[in-house]
Length: 254
Image 1 (cartoon, rainbow, N blue to C red):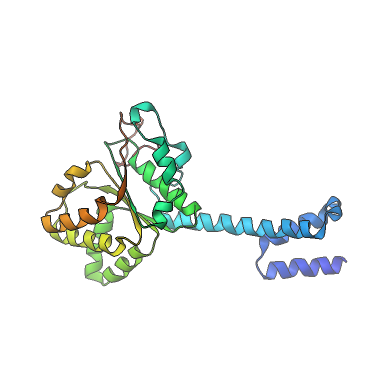
Image 2 (cartoon, helix red, strand yellow):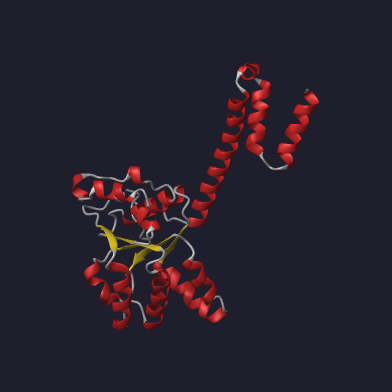
């Protein structure tokens, strides 16, 4: 019997079924498990592997998402009355059905009101629904695209931006967009419009977005695609950042 057990452990190891191997070892080492029905013991072994793979996949999705705040969680959003957040509306979005439908999300508010935390929390929720997410600061993404025009990586980067189920564009409107940046942003938005979701955060209210674009025609095109069918969240209230925190412009966690 010991030889069969060892052979089974070796086979599980060779197939890289580590969690199944560990659960099998645990069952062998605890005599009480011998009284359990075979189907129950097998289910416990399979469940161990399924859970391990699910956790590994989530860790990979979160790592690839590159969220500004990886710890952000919808359940931990601050719903104090001064913030004027519609808790019911946010919870309705928590199932991420809007992402599967290819709809967009716009989060606007003053500095420190938690915009980055909110979009990161939705990114976290999407990863937990086995949806692929990528997060970028708008200015850095546009810089990468500008560099891509020169080094030949432009089309590859645009193609990569089509793939995630949710693309988070953080800190839109921090600086004016020259005509080239306008065109690049239109490419990104147009490639995803009606197919894949964008979540965008900005200090500027949507009514002021048009002025960010130096090319008014492209502004019309981008805003038409982004704004008309988007869910909106507008946190209010005083800044949630600690007063002694010297940071680079990201939002508070809540």
